[in-house]
Length: 206
Image (cartoon, rainbow, N blue to C red; front, side, top):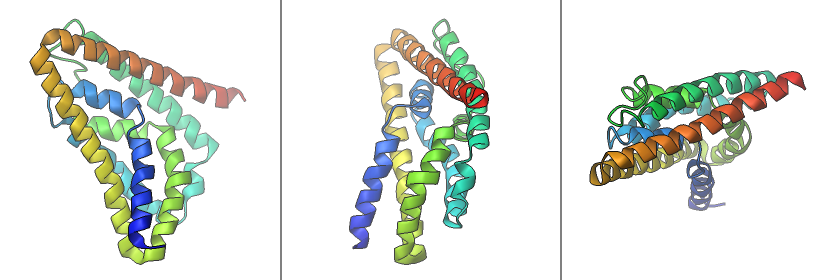
């Protein structure tokens, strides 16, 4: 298989995960009201976790990240982080210039914690991502490096686009737009946080 064909397929697969609505998307849109560059920094935080993980997976430890106990632990951690962020965003409905006081000042930290707290992120890399990494090694170290960069660039460009769009909308439409964004994103994070905790509790009780 030619390298460009493999890379094109890998990018499409990566985008299918990047474009899917999720906690990172909601946080990016919410923080975009404060800075058009928030999505870029969230992507950098995401990459701080993702690049080492890709390297570890290249050395064949994917089964560890798919283990039941790790998914349960991450589900609990991720659910609590998302609920905390949701409360901060919902408070922003009353004070639209703020948002989550902790995460609004550190999109980089938000990217790191949201990534670490997502069990689905690790499961995706332990399954679909691991398969892509295995295929990339058919093209040597250069193929693996290009795959890692291309995948992360999908996160970076999409996140940057979302936060810039949110920032432009907030400044064009005013505070009512900010309140609507904070409300929608806050409710989304509440749902995701509750979902994470429910899945984790179900695993413990199974």
